[in-house]
Length: 404
Ligand SMILES: *Cc1c(COP(=O)(O)O)cnc(C)c1O
Image (cartoon, rainbow, N blue to C red; front, side):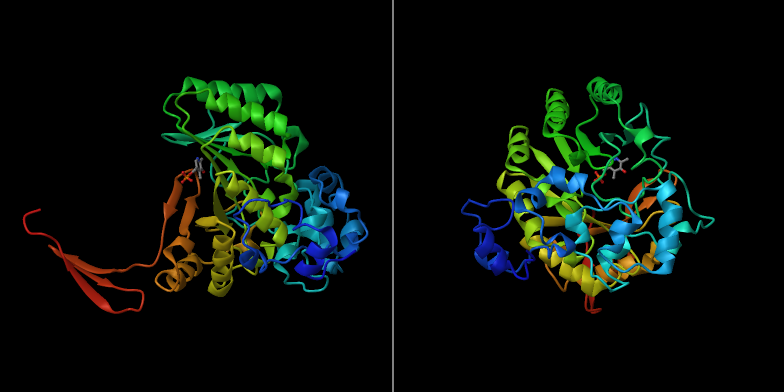
């Protein structure tokens, strides 16, 4: 059965989607603005399967024929599929695929998950490891760049292989699977380095691992007195919200503080299923942030970003970073001028809640790390006198105290 409206979904299933939201935090007024995924060609799949994250994983769309049953592919896409699949596999959960518009070539879900000819183009500035993560890797599976925090890669798998992946040199490649020994070595490195107070679990998508494996990793981290913050970097809220089960949330609840950084790029990804999954995390006290990548033809207009960040706040997700698309291979068709990002921030600052405004950052090629950039509001600074323009371009002066 295809769900055409949220009401039909609720009436037919007798509940609000997968994550049964029992708490007082359920606000039907807000929740009512979110629509369930349409299910498309999977309309006849039983709920028990559709809502199961393992079913979604096992039934990922991988072949040309399968994709052809969801959307009508162009010749270019067919060609790109054959070529790109060898380097960076195609994989899309039925849930995410069902969000695709069947005929619109510009559909933002399609652009993010179906290879195009642009992916085959290498430009001179492209790099295999754009952020030099492997150079800053003291042991396999760890990138230690900043003084007090590390990235810890715990799996190479993801439910959906995003075509703009910065780590496609190893994500999806089975030979890159983090073996048990690699996890042990990563944990040993973290234990041995008391300067590490923040660990970002990454990959791949860490939620591709079982609850048991994740609990083992998280509990080992919690046993390190110097590890204060544990972050999970996961796109499952977007690509496979059914992964956020009661059992998983119970694990997280035991090891607070847990921060969860997810990756919505377009308002169309803000479905009822995603809303309910985020609500479960938030109700367990998990703080959710969002990292968006600016992508040409997907979200490079301020109206789209504004709609996205407003939806995220309704989902109790705080916009954290807006990334300039990096220099990974075959991404030049996705890149926007840096001015585009600055212009988007300029259209938000002052015009909407500060809560909704992410930090626009460029993660510097070669391992320089993230630097924030944004519109310039300082007109001049002479002695104690600072001249500013505000968001409406009016001028204001601030004079510092004398004798500082
Ligand atoms: C992005 C990143 C982090 C986390 O950075 P925050 O600015 O603290 O979110 C840590 N290590 C590496 C290598 C990173 O790229």
